[in-house]
View 1 (cartoon, rainbow, N blue to C red):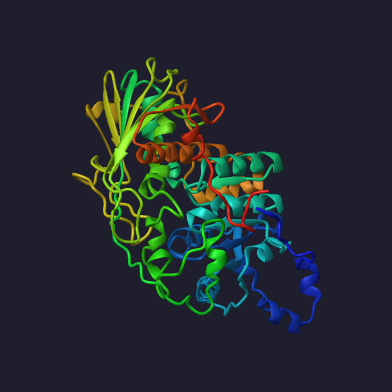
View 2: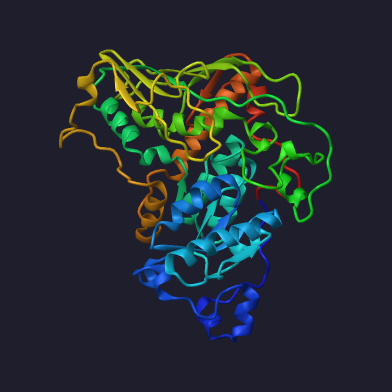
Length: 468
């Protein structure tokens, strides 16, 4: 995306404190901030965070995930919906007010993320926008010197995901993908068991995803006051506003954009980015992808929402140290919601159990609520020995990110890993659309002798919301 940062930037906190109280009021900071609001961490060990996109996932998952830690403080929020900016500021202010017992009104609100990125007081950002904005904002953020927590999926297209990962690498910023299953003990343990051969040679993996309904009202409606719908559409085509294409004007229930191909691919990337990432962890294919992909799906014939419905896609991976013959992966809404690893000596099934990230998450499709099961109970009672493979351990995804922002160590879900999980999901989506077998080179990230499929690696971008 073209860099549209304003020439002037907001003054540093040191200069700000020296300003008159009137200036403080203009920016929305209190003239006196109780030290207790930020815990016992010295300023040099505390991360100032700006939240970009303060809708459902931000309010129920990302902002609470950051606010729980004393080594961070959210000092700004940004949204293209003015109503959500007001409520986002109140959400953060109320947290600090309750935490300290002192009235707090210090959160700054922005209507444009470029202005937030220009604030030199902000060290890092959490990006909780619709999918089609993920990679573009992340690229702008790391170029502006900010560390990033990026909601999954990593990108709208494979080309954008590659550009995002390259930008993180070239800038040296810390970027964590919001694949929080990596910080959940049963997913790590399942991956360790598979990687250490507890089910023998890995042969196949089944991934079950929840679904979203067809439907959606197509009637054109007036754009709500205070909502920058033109910028919200971003790089995607200019189409008329209707509420089922965007998000509810009041409240934070599941938004309609999740079901529109214009802004994403549906559940294959929505939950698929989680489950494919967790599967890759056990398969030891976190930095590669499949070599063959095929499948089929039903797509809605009526209504506004047009992401996939019932589907079944399959993929083959090259042999490696976990699978001597290569893994056959199958993804379908017909399986239980979770990941099932099949080996030559048994199987392991892992899921979130009854856990939900937001209150409006789709219902689980499980025979029971057990988060980890196996063909033989002895498999999941196994102890990983000191000389065996021990995978990266994180107790919570946001906390791990904050620790890495301070230490500059690699987080548990870095950019390239998130890109590979997302790109794999997008490959499965392309197989659904084309309804034929595709041959993929995971090193070159190109299809073999397939001009039509390679044409789907990117999309036309509407100016000025383009990569540069």
